[in-house]
Structure formats: structure tokens, C-alpha cells
Image (cartoon, rainbow, N blue to C red; front, side, top):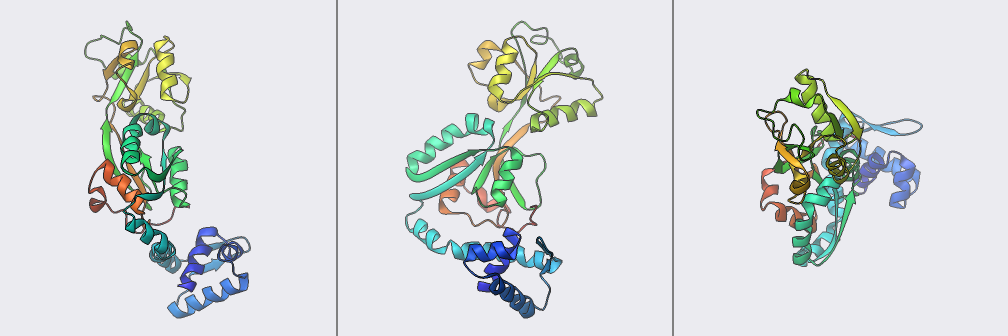
Length: 305
């Protein structure tokens, strides 16, 4: 176990010196443990350079197997205490996209807090890219959001599905137009989230695939701002149904665009091989009971770091 800990920490932190500091050991001690591990397994696991260490194919295979073992062993005492408390206390960190925190999570958080009032719950507002980084760095137990591309080391379980919606000011020509076509949107300026966001990428993909021109008048972050600008008559927008409320339908004309644009799915995002705490399992079971029994969250995956 000491050798495996030295190996996992070295890979995770990138250098022998950082691993030694984290494990309160000397760098030569870490080096000896790594050499002993390679000798015992009969394979070279790491290629050492002046700045970092990189994994060989054999090292990659061992890291996928060893990381959950080391994490599970290190968390054994805490997990035992948590299990005996039946997730009544502890800590849970969830990364989520801003729209998810604002529109999807409130009722879930309320139910979780009512059931587990002693759990310290931390919600981190993160983009998709930042959320994955938090999962890989073990700074978040899980993430909730939407994904287009799922990396090899990540498991995603979609749960909620929302239609794409066209929003315009009341009285806009598109608000009541029969047989709404994609080409009908071309003359009007779109108000969309920044280009790095999933919504922009989806809208651009559909227009490009259909060879239909479109015009982005304003790029702005935050669904509330987008809806406000549309209501002011500054343009039209294509948003996900997750952000449409009853109050919005009083100030905006809302039309379903599922005919032209794909649905957006939101769900649980986890790092494969992650040792889930009872607090995390309880949160996921609240989203959908038994969700974990049907997913590959516990399979090891190639690290994308």
C-alpha cells in the first residue's frame, strides 16, 4: 500500500517532490518505493523527465486500478464513520452549471437539506470544463449539468430532458407565425450565451448543418439577462426549456423548437473510479433512486488531465 500510495500521488501531483511533500516523506524515499514497485511488478511504470513524470502504458493500467484502492483506503475511517451515521453528517461538494443551480437544483437542495440537515453542502458554480477539472482533482464529489462530449474518464447519467425554445417579445412576427421554419429566424438578431457555452455551439451546429445563415446580435452570459434583453426588444433567442418559468410566459412569447433543435439533457456527472461517499450517494438517490446501479461510474477511465 505504501508503494501504491507513492505511485498514485506521484502521478496525481506530477513530480516526486510534490508527492514527497504530500506524504511527508523525502524525495529519495518516494523514488525507492517507485523502483521497488516497478521491480516487484516487472514493468516500467513511469518515465521521468526534468520537470514531470509521465505514465507508460503499464503505468496507465496500474493507475486506473490503484487510484480507487488508495482513495478508498485513505477514506476508510471517514467513510466508516459516515456509514454508521447513515449519511446524517459529513460534507458534500457539487459542481453545477449556473443554469442548473438556478433552475434545477433548488428543489433538490431543499429536499436534501430537509433529509440530511447536518451535511455541509457546497455548491460550486462552474462551467462544464471547470466542473470536469474539479472532478478530476477530487475537489468535487459529483457534478450536475449537461454534456455534449463525454471524455473517457467521465461517466454521465442523463436524467432530465428539456426542449429548445424560441423566445421573442410579445407581438413579434415569429410569435404567431404558422409552420415556423429555421429560415424564418435568419432576418432577426439572436441573443446568445458566449461562444464557449454549449447553447451557442448547439445553435451554430444546427444552422451550419442546415446551411441556413444566422446573425448573432448580442453575446451575453446568464439566462436571466438573455430573457431580459429579449423582453426589451433587443433581439430573439433560442434557450433551453429549463430556464422558462411561468412568469417568463407573461413577458415573452415562447415557442417550442424541438422540430429543429435537439433536446438538452441534464444529469449526474462523475469521474469513473471515484469512491463515492454516503453523502454523495444519498444526493444521487434523491435525484433518481437506483441510478448508480445502472451506470458505469465505478469503472476506471483514462485520465484526461
